[in-house]
Image (cartoon, rainbow, N blue to C red; front, side, top):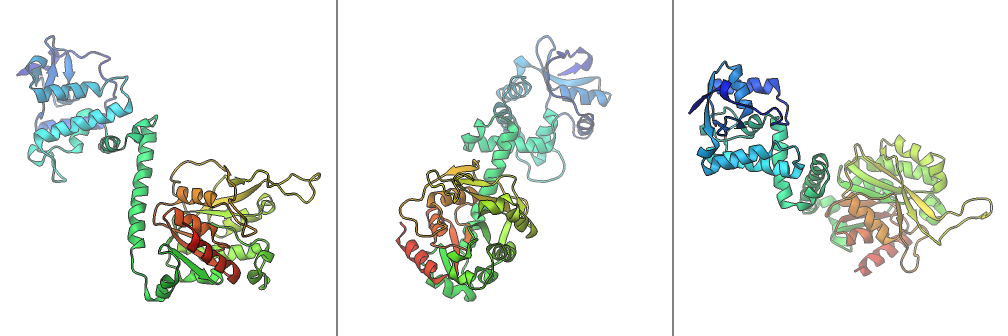
Length: 422
């Protein structure tokens, strides 16, 4: 039936959304060209229940009356639609309730008019589109599409619904989608056949996912594919007496590190996260920061602190602080990708068993960094692997590893340790 627009009564506090004039103009154009898809709904006293935007658009077109149905005359489908439209306008609606209701409303219209299979037009024969739902509710098509996507994700992943705000939930969804994309890419990369140049390397590795290379990492890294490494974790030989091979070429630890960071830069993926353990004195004096920045990396404002209680050292215990921690500079190639999970800057871990290398790190600490910086099957590189602790952590995390070591003694030890690691 038709009802005069002047007879329809609208409660002043009925709708909480603002009306975008441009979108009202678009809806008015649609009413002129296509007509009214759904009638408005009123109660027995002519109070509006659903369709205020349609009324406003009709008035813009100069209409004096509009197709109307009374609540008592609605069929089951129409009652569901009215209920959802009303729920979407409640002030106390949580974002989870809101996006789920929006998704349900969109799907109800798709059930009646079919899903759109084309990009243009707005007719019934082309099905119901996200744009139609957006116009119905007076919100942007982009926001409607994102809310529907979020609702679908919440239904399959309840963790998203635990976020305090819609923005936080969308942010988490974006991170999860990025991680899934990285996981798929890592699997594809890991299953590629090695080229002939690296075939002999793959045959000699102690573990299918791990490659150990003997030699100067500054040279070895040049043979690796560009943008293949997802994470760098290393502790360069700052004190070259640890490594007689590097010590013999009279290259100090700072220069050696800068050369390696320059060579490995093109081999890192965009956004790759990097952890560089270093001497506290170098970090305090700014030498490490300047060195890494000069190589083009983006440095985080925080560094990692490996806290190692009861292992404090000081040559002058009454003149200086006893050092019971070791820092690691945290940086990335380009804009950093998100970590898999939030983490605190201070981490307490102990080395289990006997220490094999002077600069050895706990396997559990390295595993923690790897699991937060990468996804399964991504490649982690340690160009100064020493006794191979980083590669042991890589193996435990089901990542791929590339370890390099110039000293034959440490290389042989790393190979032996990896073969014995369960």
